[in-house]
Image 1 (cartoon, rainbow, N blue to C red):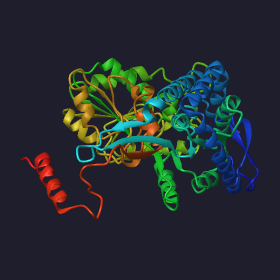
Image 2: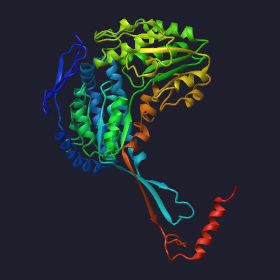
Image 3: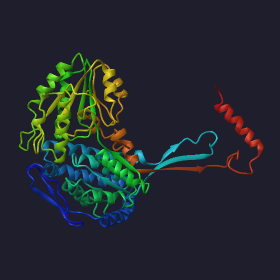
Image 4: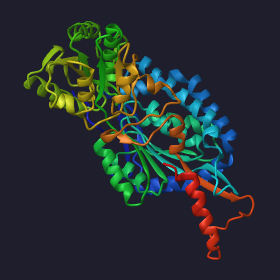
Length: 498
């Protein structure tokens, strides 16, 4: 029996969170109304002022304590993740550990990145002292996904908190229990004010958050939903940061370490049941090593299996409707002349999708052009890496990418139209807290993580302070003609050279 997405019976009631592996009810949560959301944002306004008042040091101390709670209770957190997503405990642990690293980095570096900075005033304005500071926005609304319910939303939440904002967090309706666990742990460390609040429900609750007067929305999810959020946010000029879908490529050069490239492809394509926005969906391989690479991928994939037992490498497809998308993409690829060297149409069941490796798939097929978000991968032969780059960039998406090459790794990485690229390692950019994370095109815009992620949740404030009266008064109707003549001469000396 296929799991059915829980639906509310009426506004203001509750909904059940179900295990995608068994349909067992693992939790019951309120469906927050627009009024509930508005009230949460109003509470957050007061909390934000208090939280900002703690200063960088005070906030850093609270964030350190929060990550300590998460670390000490890691097995408990991982079990909640497994209950709601079906993923193996070790995968839940991996995303949680990375999230803890990001909390640590954000808290430690916020003052250095966002503190007051001096700027040069220039020769003409040398009587001025110029500074820039980054002030908290106020209240940030975070709408999180279900595929990585710890790592992904905390990439926004931790950085928004470190920057001095209060946060109202709406997790996916598939993983409300993970969201509640995280918020409850934070409340233990910050009991004074509702600095981080939870709201739960469906699309209507998320829409209410967008329109509730928050100072910014951070959204992770599908491109289609991201566009709707942008349209709604435009009504109130609420800024947004959007991390949407991906169709991430891997490039394998003739001199690549094929074992490492094959291993990265298998893990990147199939881990988490392929439900990874930066997961591997397309591979472009130099013709000289194509056949050997395909053979290695197939061999390494043979023992990879979906299931809910301890031996399974990944779990069920969390969102039941995605099974239909995965099957349709495989069917289209095969109908267009592609070949399944592993798996195929029959690999997609009513809860699980087993690994599928496709070759000879036309570049205009759905399996190549649309995000599959399942455990499938297409492998294409190219004459050289120039063709690989051209094909990799021929997509509306532009999130992550990976290059395997001993001699041209950096060169190829710089040519890829993506927000992030890993060289000779799978998805390594996601684990480096100092690197910004985000995409271009239909993969969204804005950045989380790193200095850019901290500044994403701050308001830039420029301040010019006159240190002494300038000998030349430029901003006055009483200035003399001789002053204008002197300014023209100075500008010519400074900037008029050919």
